[in-house]
Length: 163
Image (tube, rainbow, N blue to C red):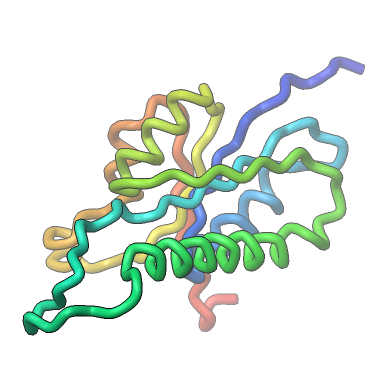
């Protein structure tokens, strides 16, 4: 029997149901029993903002807002990775799982990590915004589909009426 090449498959995850749907889809479709593929979960934290000890109203804020923000970020990362774990923990096949956390503009970080890791595939969920919202906010999945050098699979959230 011929041994199959190990593939690195990056799945972008965040707080959304769409990203968990993409993770679930990738497990069902890209990790057959006995495969030696590596699942790389990638979460991107937004860039740190500049803070001062004076709030918008001009009052001095007590405590350390940067420390509070970092604590919140850490909790958010742990929450997203825990949600991901609930999706893959009952998966039948033993798969290699790596967790990566980046910081910055999500589309740029995803593109750079995929390139740096020489990933074989990127799986990403989509919020399926309409034309105007996508034009205003931009689309991470659309950006990645156009600029990432490996195949990109964009997973739409299942429509409950079409199950």
